[in-house]
Length: 364
Image 1 (cartoon, helix red, strand yellow):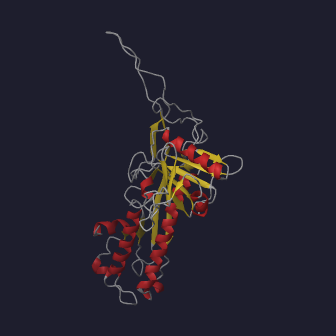
Image 2 (tube, rainbow, N blue to C red):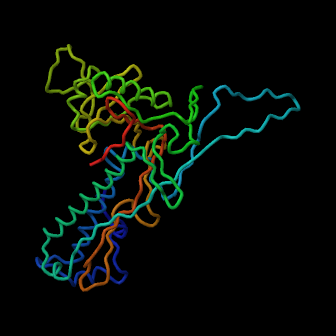
């Protein structure tokens, strides 16, 4: 997709009197003019910002929003039916139960540290390295926040009394929430999507079945995604339920079951009686954890996560310049966003240990 001036205005915010003619008056040591610098930096930020809604992790998100809160159904009546009505009768009024939670919004930033002397002596390779480092740190910030929300039970305070809550956690975060009824099944506020199983092959098999059951009973059918630590890959590929990916370069002579998956994303499949998981590794997730999620593609309203951003600014980086001796002197890049749970039953996380309860991981 082409990058136009309207894109750049969103991500590089300069004083109103800095037009292209003004910027062309200034040059780096290697002769690069500042309008070229702004174009190149802006293009890099646009590509990064678009990446937040593309690629693998974008599949986990509902449509981004500027709204501060979500509302959704809670509970249900398994045996209740509509009343029989006589000719002149009037049925009792009914009302759906609901609850909700706040979505966080935090300001992150990176100062480029481009002083007057640094800019006067700068060459193209130098500022390109700085922008790469800025985007690297921004990517780390985004991915750590999304994985923390997927795997942590902690409540994030929003404002003075608001709360951003995890998946269904047995009523700890929100005692008023019970998952909605599905196909006659009713759920209580004690319904918990954070599990603990033994750290061995039997425990992993039990966890696979439990996570599949938790998603299935809410109407979230397979395929599901199973996110595991990269360090535990050998443990999971040794499970009897694991199916290696099919490779055109390997002939199995019809004696081995293989999985048809995108090898650039997944390492294979895990099969259960209720459906199958596509297995994805993450180097950020510590050992002894796994998470099962129903992901339906970017923007789907049933996805497990939702991102909040500030109205009037892009979801992503915006570089702000100030009036100084040089354009972009002491410029700061801001990244304002928050990630909350969008579907309270859209994910299940498991901690593997000999005893105890689920413990929140440290995401790297």
